Length: 134
Image 1 (cartoon, rainbow, N blue to C red):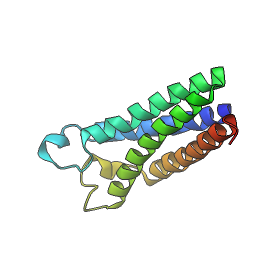
Image 2 (image 1 turned 135 degrees about the vertical axis):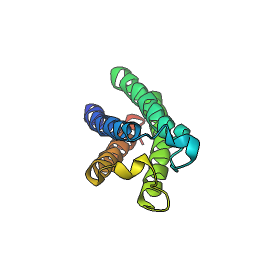
Image 3 (image 1 turned 30 degrees about the vertical axis):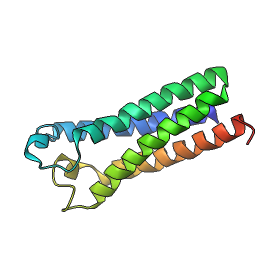
Image 4 (image 1 turned 45 degrees about the horizontal axis):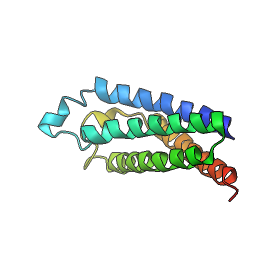
């Protein structure tokens, strides 16, 4: 399951990179100064930084099979998932929240990123539980 989680994580990351590209190419950073967007820069960049950090811990777990790294990865991934959920709920707000570059996000890409992200989250949780004998 550890390697399957890496594959789903990679798919999630690729779609996430695409969404970040759409946001940046739509002027997302430039809209921060004028408050046109409700996606703060810290939120936009903390989500992938935490996800990549969790993935690094996960790779260490897969290489060492040390349950501590599996749970560390799950904890950091949980923080990233909370930020992702925050962005998703703001994006769903439509006219109230998605006022800037995030309006250009393709629905299919957002849904794919979220669904595969949830699958990854569940795989990491189940693998960490099995690794620690829970």
